[in-house]
Image: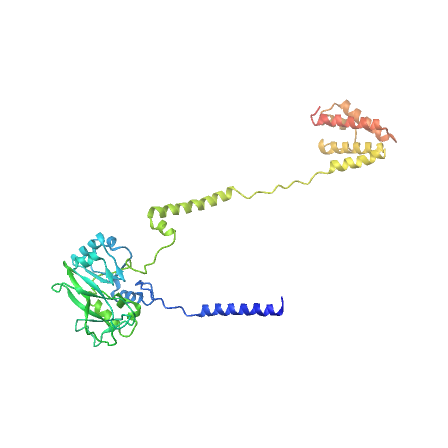
Length: 405
């Protein structure tokens, strides 16, 4: 690699390292997603409100993760059901159940930009969206009607947001609690329209607010905005149970784990547990029964026979038949000592009788063999025929001992 190539390579590595550092240290952009989730600390999450209500209401603060249709199956529930989201789409039988619950003397509070048409028809409401005639963006201003809750100047959210208002109301029964207007460079409501109402329903009541952002972290932590949110919630009795809905949320956590469905069903969950227990027992017991393969180790080969044949061959090639005969006689005597367990120091009649008894041969055959071996030992030289005869006599004698004759 040339010097120029090295410079180019290190320059490229330095540039890549610099880009990685810049990306790693770059501040994370603000997430303006309207989640309304209690766990989100982003601007449009409801972490702050959830924390404040939980602390203030204490035991009366109750969270519900299930749909209202399931929650309200408990007919003994009483209090306020609170919904906050950019779109609360309660329809069908679930809406009928919620309205029936309110009709029994309970409170339903919904803060949202839009609703199901059936809810609006039931309450004879119509929602319009306001637009600015002088600017592209729409920043909402709002204030409460009650003189005890009204401030000198309206509250403002300095973000381009959707602004909803009611243009049709049943003024005989429904009460306007708050107004809104698009900000036009002057912090004053000149042509206010309703955005917060109370509608009686049977023995209960329904509150609807068209600006759910007033319950988010961004609004509550900005200036003195908490005063407005407190004023809105002051219409709810702190003595009643407060049911916080976690189901109708744009930022509701979604379970992506494949085990969620499995563990969410009682029968599938126990089947899964039994499968794990069965697998554990299988490992414990089968692991003891089946071990890894044991390699075959061959025992050391007995080379005595080959060695003996080699040595005998050497003697035979040199025609030293006498030496071979003496080796055969010595091996036979060793055979008697180790196999028949008889000492060979004294070769007398008692010795012959013991050898004959233990070898299966007669005494005469034993004496004849030993007499022949003695003759061979005392002969200076022997012929091949004598050696072959000695081998044959000893082999025949031993075969009776081994039961082969």
